[in-house]
Length: 222
Image 1 (cartoon, helix red, strand yellow):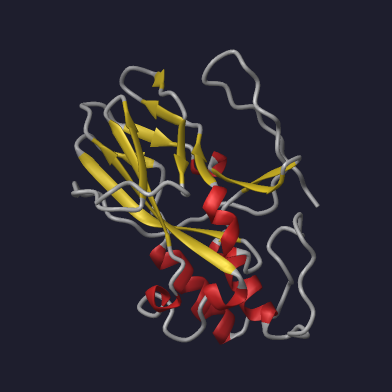
Image 2 (cartoon, one colour; image 1 turned 180 degrees about the vertical axis):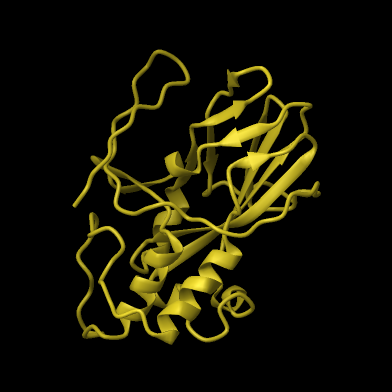
């Protein structure tokens, strides 16, 4: 299993490094300006990032009418990145982490799953003994490998269509889409989780913004 380690610094104090278990979420989103009404958000330097964890199974029905990632232990987080500045922004989607606390001495940073990984987990989950729980974190990247039949393709395409289209956010525009995290059904971990976005760059100024760390356990009033 591949592990990645990173350091987070807002001030010289060093954050404890964490291991990762998944991969990047991808696919479709729309460049537009929106009014943000969401669970949690952080805003600075002209950029606002909001995160809305989907913890209600009914929210998945429109995007996943047949097989829901939520039923397989995956939680989708709807992320909106709004750029109110005059600069184009590039977001390092591959560096986003969901930081979860397993215990007082155990923290982990989970990467979003790719659409392929989502399909692997969803289609593989039904083939396992339901009385057996998957191993607690960390788990193999992408979950169980399964055959890519039409049902696998349907899930993969649905995950891609609902995901974030790409890393670029034009001036005074927004992008929106889902990131997928395999929490193995442990939704309670979200109560102390943070969505960590360390890599946002203003291209015209060649300036890296301060990192975003969105506390999912502290909803922002609508």
